[in-house]
Length: 182
Image 1 (cartoon, rainbow, N blue to C red):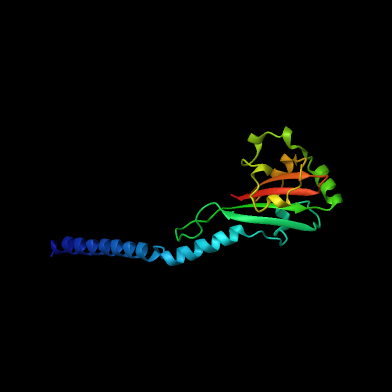
Image 2 (image 1 turned 45 degrees about the vertical axis):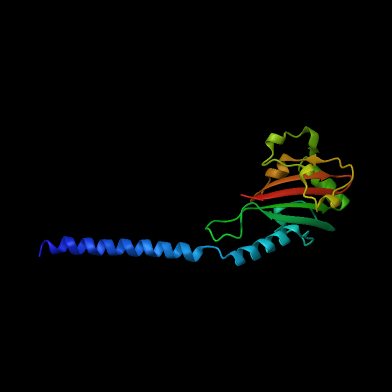
């Protein structure tokens, strides 16, 4: 009887191990992306990324001090592949151009101590980027011959749930922003 117990335990252990292997293989096969689903998802993502949105920025606290702006144009792009079923979040990057009221542009520049962009240290930005990196669909909304200002305190100010970089042209009442999830 004593020799049967180790044999029985070995058989049970091997059975459990086999069930785990089969279960893992089945799970992997069931998660495998259906090419039609992936293609439809990718088409949807491309269409969403091409769209220039004009709805107000929400939540507004992510872009403080803009006031009651009359106009905004923004886009969003995925940094990864949102069409995969692999676990983990997809990071997103946003760009936008906001037309401000004159008093809000002046108040923003004063409150956050915006300085000429030429004096900013690009290495000090949360991520590389400048108005020269604006996505093509947003370029028509940028001012001609802008005088961009930059503010480290605005970029790093609370709340900072995303990396934020903003450029302000007070005279032309325009703010260009880039946000990235992190």
